[in-house]
Structures are given as structure tokens and as C-alpha cells.
Image (cartoon, rainbow, N blue to C red; front, side):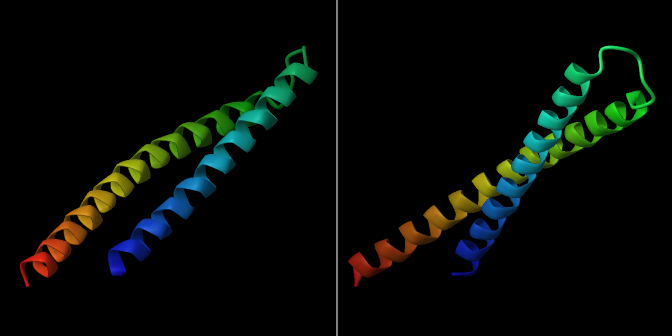
Length: 87
């Protein structure tokens, strides 16, 4: 059950990071479309893009970790059910 809990936790974390990244991208698009002239928010936009890039990298890392945990869970279930069938 511990692996399942880890998978569930990773799924929730992945979902949260994805939602935050999408929200930042939406905010960035709104700022850029509503301000056609160069403004002092340019640095903020750059910072938001950096944060988004970081979150996307974290998202990819969590996806990879989630996939590995899912494989582990499947392997454990397979071994478990093979043992039950053997008995």
C-alpha cells in the first residue's frame, strides 16, 4: 500500500504543479495582451517565464517518478497474484 500512497501523492503534486503553471501562463498572456507598450512589468514577465520553465521541469520529473512508481506497483501486483495462483 505504501507505493500506492506514493503514487497518489505524486499524482496530486503533479496536478498542482500543472495547474499553477497553466495559471501563470494565462496571467502572463493577459498581461502581455493588455499592455502593448513596454512597461516596468517586463522583469516580472521574465520572472514568471522562468518560474513556469522551472515548474515544467518539475512536472516532467514528477511524471517520470510517477511512471516508475506505477511500474513498481504493477510489478508488485503481478508477483503477488502469481504467488496466490501458485498456492
